[in-house]
Image (cartoon, rainbow, N blue to C red; front, side, top):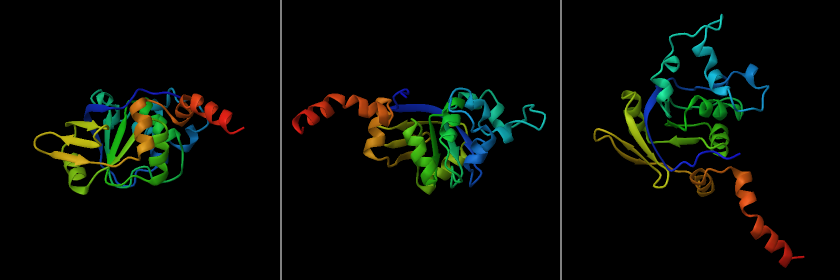
Length: 193
């Protein structure tokens, strides 16, 4: 599964400042019956966005401004709870390409990277600035591993493992990477038979 290469992203932010947003809040378990990624964006944060009668609530995620944001700023400990690849799928299908928090759960972090979605853990001061300035346009530079904030907010480094960074920059998942190595693998096998 290929996705658009992620090099530099400039976008306004959408802030969901609640702490401990878990994967069941991102996409409720009742929607995990599909293996198709398309259409999951309308189910992202379903129980926050829709009432019991399936009508839209006044939640910020239902606004036209929110749908223009590609960067989600979340409260501490984002993506905790059960493992489900549907969570980054839903966020990407909604329109997000990255999430920034002061802490991101390990399993969500791994699932996100494998699916072309960039999870960024940033230092507390920068995270607080982002929480306090919703809707600001910021820059994520994956090549430099930096988040650049406006209004003298500063530039902050983040870490991403080299393999995941390579795949994101190229717009490829692990299988794409392996397929790209076919010639090298064939040569190795020919030498070692």
